[in-house]
Image (cartoon, rainbow, N blue to C red):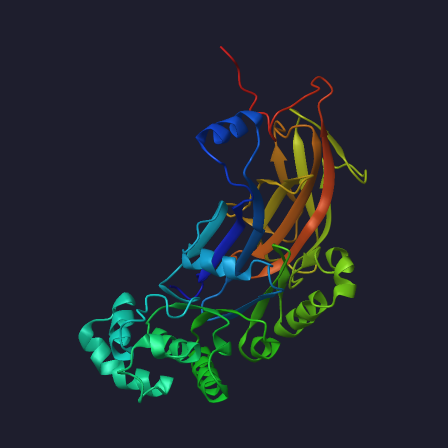
Length: 393
């Protein structure tokens, strides 16, 4: 990885699961339900339109209440899950510490499981023999290594698994609540290990509910709430956001207070308009030109990348054009022009983000930059979200 290349890039990530809520009694009933349009499941959207970047050498935190999508996001980064849509780009080798002990065999001894788990991580028998004593010493299990793993307590198993896992040589580590394993003495060892890899500028992604660890180790923190990203913050501000999420009396205010905008503000958006209209909700005709103009507070002149996100009134993500292949600067207005607006009639929300030309720093990001409406007086019913303007022959 080059110094300028991000370690992880996530763009417009969506993930959902199908949750069954009835069982068919047979093939006949299943076929009847299909013809009736009856679904035997409901769709649970776990992550909605998640975008962020993690820099090389960054200790990056992810926080949120239970059920916000944190563990699912980690499993997507690790490749355990596949997203419904969106981009995940990992630049370098990656080791996930998500489910410690996966691959352990309870009928084998601790010693045998060390070599088994090491093989799964790609180490040779000779390499594991050289590391064996240090693994056992770190786990503090010298007296138990010839006992079967099924006789270990859950804490002993996790300590052994963690002691093996940290031997993996990779560019990126993904950790899910690893700091919570073991007793106080073992947690102290974990803390010393994380301070060491932070000093070595190892790229680390940490999910935890422990705000002390977030402030101690992390450089920035992504805050998730109800499957969406509220924003990326410094650790102190991220802690405040997390604490606010855990106070039920403040939850109704969250979408208007903290879910609209974030960024370093080196470049700041002053105004966004559609077709130069001054209306609060501009109207655009389908099939006619569509222009989005982004105006900046012209404090500095910097090379920038501008990204747009078109969402319909049910928050379905329609399109996300960006200016990666263009040379744009913050001292002039930026216009995105479409010759023939393909959007079907309805209400739409536009999201706007401005980044540096290396896509490492988010200068300004507005979730609800502007709403606009698309109309087509000639057509009453339209199917889908866009018109391809094709011909039947």
